[in-house]
Length: 165
Image (tube, rainbow, N blue to C red; front, side, top):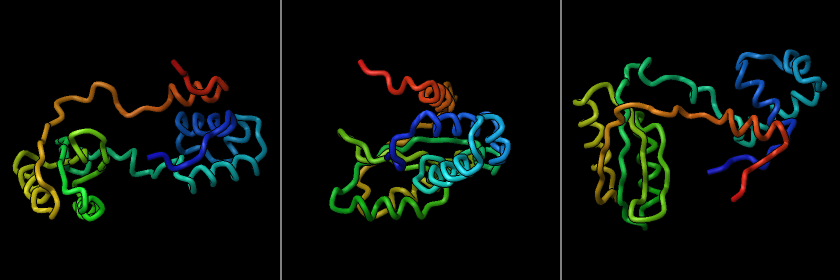
């Protein structure tokens, strides 16, 4: 699941600054962080290339696009067709994320839908994927903790790294 390598405190400071001010320019970051422009630009570029800094679309709210419902679908699949199933799920626009899992469930997909009828249609598409043996859909009722990495970035920027044990 990880894309990039380990980040150091300078990378973490750049990412934290971008979290706080996503539209900051490299020049603004150099002034704010006390780093050279070449350092900021080189590291920013590497963080994007290696996948540490994800795409802008991660910040777009699906509800604003007309998809206010979020559902999580767990699936059991034919293990010999796992790659094929993943590719087919990627072809369904409303499937916004898919994770491979360990344990009794093989895949977890986050799906967005316009309404209950739309979710029913999407569920039908998921079941029609060759290799999907069984699925279970749970509607997200409320997001209690939104996606966040700021506390981890703050820790990394301080140089304290991961907490163990």
